[in-house]
Length: 197
Image 1: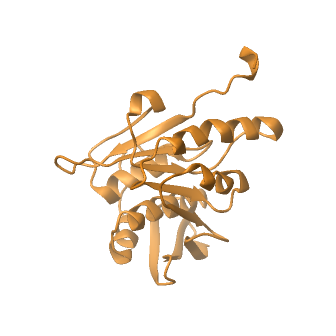
Image 2: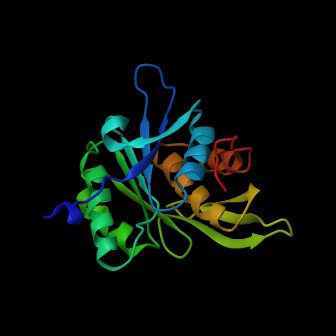
Image 3: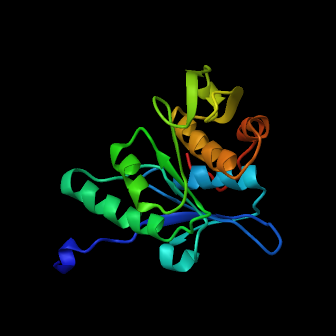
């Protein structure tokens, strides 16, 4: 492999929960949505801070979230390979959360020794159903869990892209054992100043 063909490590947004003695490190990667998703996760999981870093600096995540695989053509395959290295680091009792609407992200499931939970709008274990936008561009939808139960969500940030970020964060919360109602309620609250639009 020439230096030009080398695979760059993915940039991560990292959230660390404040659990005493056993913090949960959640690494979020993808071409788009890392900071917004990390801000949602921080709110949902009660974390005080988020950071953007590399896999080497993040330590060993227990949860990995793959939002999407960027680039086009062969670049997409190389990006997926680099992101797959994140999934390789997960422990068997960890969690891989993958975008079911992105075929490259979904295909990474085989790389994880941890359980896999998918999210999306058209497919996935955790879905946003019946998405609609108010005049200010804020989304409302029904969040469905892997068992088919649903709860209403109304996001406070504008943009249809926020549905994607919220559904990814919801999959992490549900995968870590939070109740659907708590997850749905937390998604509608202020995400904090660190969230990108």
